[in-house]
Structure formats: structure tokens, C-alpha cells
Image (cartoon, rainbow over all chains, first blue to last red; front, side, top):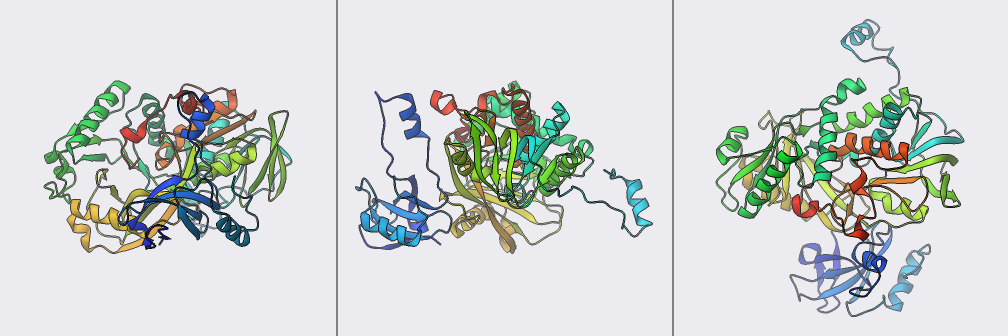
Length: 107
Length: 415
């Protein structure tokens, strides 16, 4: 069972309380961008087997979107952070590095 | 290869069944092959089989990280149908379904294809309109489906509750020649036929890297050393993204878990396949008597081959309303597989940015039914270097061009 702590209301929410929103930190491309950029934004996904950053919504709680760092291969949760972040917080990245020395880092 | 037949059984019976040979060989890899297929699941083995049968290419290795047919080929709910909305989908799935009809004879291996009939229930007016549209499209495509009344549904499936309360049955899309097959036997049958043609099936051999020279593939680094090849076919379902990364390109794919389960075996009570997409559940009865049940995917990336518990609950809750008698059944086993979902929920059978490297992936939640058609189309693509009519629309560049084969709308969820 997946349990994520909502960074806004502090509730340790179980999976049924949440809605998944797939990959986080996608850079948005719209009108005026190249076809490749738009395709990447729409369809290309990292889909890593390992450390992954995702969007989640605390839908049956405070209703807010937040971001989570998770291992897709073990279902371990590293931490959650507010949706207004353009990159994972440095301390969270350090924590992941400590636990997964092979991790190539966030890019 | 010794042919399987009633006479062979009689002959072996006189000899305490000691004379059966292994169904396929377990050779050490050679240094070089004309074609390497990565992934010995149904799609990979079918690709190899049709490369040999249709194009005479038999210097082929099929390499597999785990064991043959141990991924999604051995984890699905074995449903076979071809009632798709879009023309390219209907063409390839109907090709597959028609190949299933004669597969046991072709492979001399009983795959227990059972065209018992398949129902997709219409439980909302929206769904009814969608399925009527599919029936009309199928008539144009030459796929035999029809729309049937709730009363006919009740006749075909006496255990069904057509009166609701939440979602009464308003009718169903019926494909009389849809059904099920024995999933392991499909992989085993293809493997035996491939091995008989002189192809090497190399199990427990994981691909660690893809090597290339001047933009053309030259071989694969594996846990059993380097193996060279002229052409490479990547047919690895859930791990397509990982192998594509080794080959230096990206795919529009996300891997999620899909679960299925079987109940304790009971006496025969349902001789058709029933899919209820509004409530996310589908069910058939296996020859052993188990009710085979599948549901929707989990909503997040996952490589663990196990899914979330609440999805099991949702699936069963929905099915119990439609089939009240299963409320007393104990569930015997539950398992998960990693499915590779594309943006339009249609597969990719395509050339890739790497020369002589081809990919067949993205079958998502509905790959088993497509195995022979997928292998047929992939073999043509690999042999000729260009896609044939079946594979053409499924190229990986359709996402850039916006030429989607949009089955996510057409098929609902179960697919």
C-alpha cells in the first residue's frame, strides 16, 4: 500500500485518498514551439525503473496537487514536496543519492 | 521434432512415456546471428516464427532475461477479440484472431483456442452509442460483430444480473468468434516450432547494452557475453523504455501495473467471455473451472509486477453487482504484470532512429490477443526493412505527426 505525506496538510494519505498525475517537472511547450518540443511535452516520458518524480493530488483531503519522489522498482517513497517547485529540493536529492548511489541525478 | 498426435501418445504409452523429447533446445549463444529478437514472450516468439515461416530467415536468436513466456504472456486473462474501432487496429487484431483459429494445427501444439463468444456489455447510454458505432465500423472492416439485446445477453449468460441496480445491462457488443486460448501453450508452441526451424532460444540472458556502428546496430551486450547481429528486434513489453534507452532513443511509453486474479474452481457456469468496461471488470471461466478476472490498471509508474490492493476490491465490487453469485467465491490467486502504455493506447511496430533496429511494444493491457498478428507484422517489417500494410500505421512517429490510432476513447478501459 502506497502512503504519501501531503506536504500541505501534513496528512499521511493512503493511495485511495490520492489521484496519481504521472511525471512531474514537465516543461510546457505550446504554440510557437517546434514539433519535437511539443511531441516531447505531450508524449515522451522518462518512465525510469528506479527513482521517479511524480505529481499526485490529495483529492479526498485538502484537494491540492503536490509532488513526490518514489522508486518505481521497489515502491519506496523518498519524500514529497510542494507542486510549486521547479526541481526537487536539494535535501531530498541528497537523501535519494545516499540511498541510491547509482542514481544519475535529477535532470 | 516428433509430431504430437494420438498415435504418438499411444506409442509412448507402451514405453512408459520415456521417449518424449524436449520441446525446445537450450543452446549456448553463437557469436553472430542474422536476427536477434530480444524478449521470448508471445510477441517475440511469434516474430521469430513468422520470420522463419514466411521469409525463410532461420539464423535467429531469441534472447530472454527470465524464462520463456514468463512475463505478460503468462500473466494475462487470455481473452481474444478483434472488435476495435479504428481500421488499423481492427486489421491487425482480426489478423491475429484468424491466425488463432488454426494455430494448434499450424504449430502442431494444442493452444486450446476456444472461440466461445465474447460480450462487451453496454451499461450506460454513452457506452451503448460507442459500441453501436464500433459494430458499424466492424461491419465495414469485415470483423463479425453484432449488437444484441439484454434478453439475448441473459440467454447467453444466465448468471448475469441485467437489472442493475446501478448499471443495468442495456445490450452488448457480441463477437461470436472471440474467446480465449491457453496463454502458456501459445508461447510454448511457438518456441517449439522456432527451435525446430533451428533458431536458438536463449533464456536467462539479459541484454545490458546495444552496440552500433555508424548508426546501424551491430549486436547486443548480454549477461552471456556479446552477441552480434545484422538486425535487432526489441519485443520486451514493460521494459521497452529501458532497452530503447540502451539503443539511444526514447519511447512515448509509461509502464504501469495491471492485475488479474482467479477464483477457486467451480462447476461450469459461464461459457462466454464477458467484459464490463463501465465498471472496470472482465471475467471468463477457465477449463479448470476458475473464474478468471481482470480489472483496470493502476495509475502510477510501477515495475514491481504487483499492483494496489484497492484495484482488486474495485474490480470485484463491480463484478459482484453484475454477477451476484460470485459474491461467495474465494479468490485463489492474484498477480500483476507490467504493461507498456502509449499515449493513444495503440501499439508501436516500427523502425527506430537506430538503423536495422526494430521495435514492437506498447501493447498495453491487450497484447495477448494480438500475438500472432503482431508477430506476422513485425516479421514482415524486419525481413523487408519496411513496414507492410498491417504495421504501417503503428510507426513510432505518429505521435509527432498527430496520426493517432486512438483506442483509448474507443475501447474504454479494458483493452
